[in-house]
Length: 361
Ligand SMILES: Cc1cc2nc3c(=O)[nH]c(=O)nc-3n(C[C@H](O)[C@H](O)[C@H](O)COP(=O)(O)OP(=O)(O)OC[C@H]3O[C@@H](n4cnc5c(N)ncnc54)[C@H](O)[C@@H]3O)c2cc1C
Image: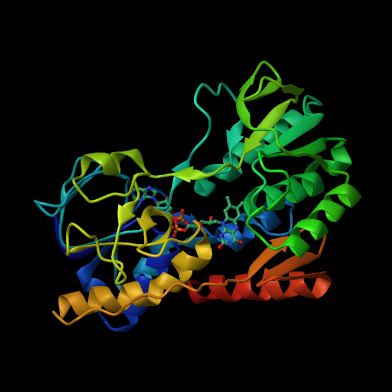
């Protein structure tokens, strides 16, 4: 099968590419490949865990979106790319040839080697199933202490959300991380607010604990310390999908696809990459906010490539707003060196998230 434009992955940038190129009447030229029909919007995952949202509230129906814009949708997972032959190999074995390829397949969980148990928050697309496992354990009374490893924004939000979900079932939650404070990458004020709110919510905080493994009910730190817990949720950093190493695409040291400021591969001009899987010339943290902002530029540059026009540059923000849900109707907004907490912040976050989802309904 051949398609002028192949979009690999239904990530935050590609849903906008489908919408924009679809509105231009180019849907027939495009094929989107995704392993699942429903693409989750990570910003609303904590709200789902806490019981505020339902599955459909934070999932984009990719098949319906594609149908709306005349885009071909293939439910499959890519396990190989041959950029010399301009071919993608999905698991089904049917080779897909492209004129232009765009890759927005996110990152994969990077959990310590030798880990024997615990659940990972990524891939988010299948987290709902893993959450059900925790529900079963809690219902059977086999979950009294739950650790969330990783104290970045995702880890903190997941800890508050799990406390909200399981608090009434007497499950205690402990947030574990290798840094001295939560969200070490955010402002000092945000860290202070979070430390206070963790205490108020009754979430234990175990800092400077570099968790390496989870065996037989014990979470083990690099320095040998041990902590007894019934289950672990890993929200630690993400790595690049492994199959990329076999593609011949130019990658950075961590295996992410190196792109120039137009989001085009440094090695193959007919390949683009966006979101977590891409490695920008001016790097930014792996966060959905960048994938979302790349969507319009990516759409335009794919279109310009088809028209053989020069490409536009994507300029990532140097300061970006982070909204951290406390899962109790309040949230923290953090930007520059300022952080504020309130119910109005949660309502604001809710409006932003809902607006994003509405665009793809
Ligand atoms: C709990 C949590 C909360 C978060 N909250 C925020 C937040 O509030 N704000 C923020 O900016 N960031 C947040 N993040 C980070 C955010 O999740 C990621 O940075 C973001 O999802 C990256 O978007 P993406 O478009 O690159 O990829 P993704 O959203 O991961 O999408 C990738 C898509 O590609 C598909 N795919 C994967 N492999 C293949 C393959 N081989 N072939 C075809 N398709 C494939 C996947 O199924 C998926 O649909 C949060 C993360 C977590 C874990």
